[in-house]
Amino acid sequence: MTVNDASTENGETPPPPPPATITFEGRHGKNPLADASFGAMCRRLPSVLAHTARMAWAVDRTGVVLLLVCQLLTGAAAAVVLAFTAQAMTHILGTGMVSERLHAALPALIVVTVAAGIGRISSALSSYADGRITPLLMTEADIALVAAVCRVESSAYGEDGFADRQEAAEVGVTRTRMMVQDAQRFMSALTRMIAASGVITALHPLTLPLLLLAVLPTGAGAVLSARVDYETHYLNVGDRNVRSMMRWWATYSRYGDEVRANGMTGYLVYWYRALSDRIDQRTLTAAPRMLRIVLATSALGGVFLLGTWATLAWLATTGRVALPVAATAVVAVQTTLAALSQFVIHGAAMFHTSLYLADMRSFLDMAGERAPKRGELTIPERVDEIRLDEVVYQYPGKEEPAVAGVSLTLRRGEILAIVGENGSGKSTLAKLITGILLADKGRVLWDSVDLAQADPDAVWKRTALVPQGFACWPLRARENITLGQPKTFDDGSVWDVVDAVGMREAIEKLPQQLDTLLAKELWGGAELSGGQWQRLVCGRALYRQTPLLILDEPASQMDARGEHAIFLEIKRIAAERMTIVVTHQLENTRLADRILVMDKGRVIEQGRYEDLVNAGGLFAELVVLAQDR
Ligand SMILES: Nc1ncnc2c1ncn2[C@@H]1O[C@H](COP(=O)(O)OP(=O)(O)OP(=O)(O)O)[C@@H](O)[C@H]1O
Image (cartoon, rainbow, N blue to C red; front, side):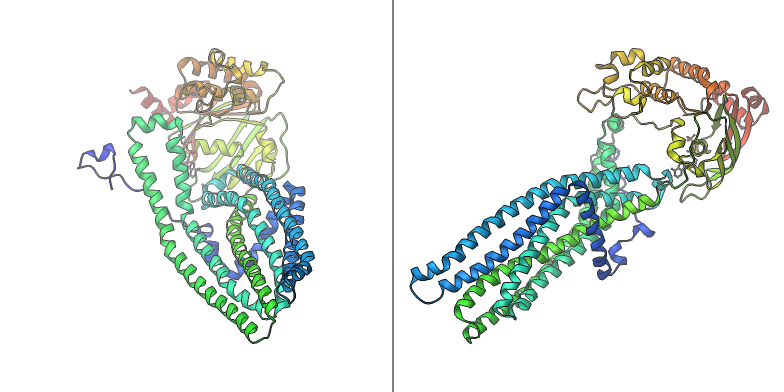
């Protein structure tokens, strides 16, 4: 393997490590096909199909009705074409003058022409209906997925298999595009088959079962291939998930500088290729299995087909069917065979697509189960106190709790600073206070309302959070402050917070001021500096004017003037709310009425700045370390 990576230019350094092998275990790591029998999978199909039908009905009733009517018309037209072709053939191949025979066949031929025309028109209209329904259906499925993920409890993100099931569901969304087409083709083949089988049975009762035998192996082959394809897809879900995540990170312009200046390009491309090779390898391993299935089922189908033709020949030569009837039978057999093949192939295609749709459905169910079910209690506009009683929280899969029994009371007007070493549980505590996470043990009470029983949207209406890793939304500057929840019809209150965070000059210099898109990747977009972004993010928290304001490392990228402005503003507005500042800048904790010092998920010290410095504990030690440079 050749890798143009700076780290390998010197032959003594180790080669770049390959992507981690990710194995998935637990309930969601299992291929549903491995668990369920074939029969069980087939029994699942109707509910998946019914769900798609309901979705299609919801997005475009006219389209669905048009599709159904056209399908019926196509089927009926096919039946008429076949029946009247048989009739015309009987006349044409009968006895008498050619002109007389043609004359006798003419009415039937006219009916065939008209019916064929109707069939074509209704088939074109079904494609039109499919073209109408499919994009809407895909959009609905896509939105349902996005909405479901946005609504789950935050703890679900860390749950085993959640991200992979989401990846599988994304494939389900794209496969939705094929579902209407598959269903439409299946239905049309079904109606044609029913029509043709009536005619063919009338010729001789033996022909239909024989034809069925001839096409069934093809259908079975298509279903078996679908299973193999799906199994491969399933094995690749985890790797594909990681690959698409990495693709975004590697190509996102915001990380471009870091990738280049740290010489990471070679490794990223190598890594991407290595993971893609692994995925391809699994797919290629399945190819010979697929070939074996197709060869075996085609051979079997061929044998049965030969049997059908031999039987027909035998029926004709032994006089069991008249010669004109036998000639008609050739046309009927061809038509029925085509309809039957389409029927089994599209049936198998529907089975195939529905496996992916079932993944989408099961993820939506999983997300639905993880949607907050906390209660209906609301939070008043004014909150006087937040109380934590022995609150414990442990992240899924972790051995130690991140917050291990914290009790505290926060009163309106108070500024609380939370400090502590990395990983001591500060951000987790902030998430528990806002109800982003619910305590495993203990309670968080806003006045008398237990967050476990409150409607989360009602709580988050009263919170403003500047998280450590904040989002730089590719929205206009205005929406980056209002977050799409404007308080007034004019920009007055937006400019107020812009002033408060010292961003007026920077915003006025943007090409369209508050209307400027803050994404340099987008046409007409502009970019802010790291510190300017952080000022803006503080501005959005101030704009919300909520009873609880939490700032997690709000000034880590700001210059001294920005930091000064933010803390002045925090103090100015502190009287009407509860303010929590999480910070490693211990000097900034001087403004706090109380400082909590956390260690291993517990509060080990609390008090004012001077008290803690004099107490000689962890806080005092951290202050000394901060000054000892
Ligand atoms: N989403 C998560 N899933 C699993 N574990 C997590 C998650 N977030 C944090 N942790 C773990 O919980 C513990 C506390 O993390 P937390 O982010 O609350 O610390 P912190 O005090 O805010 O740290 P820092 O000063 O580095 O911001 C750490 O051991 C961390 O590894």
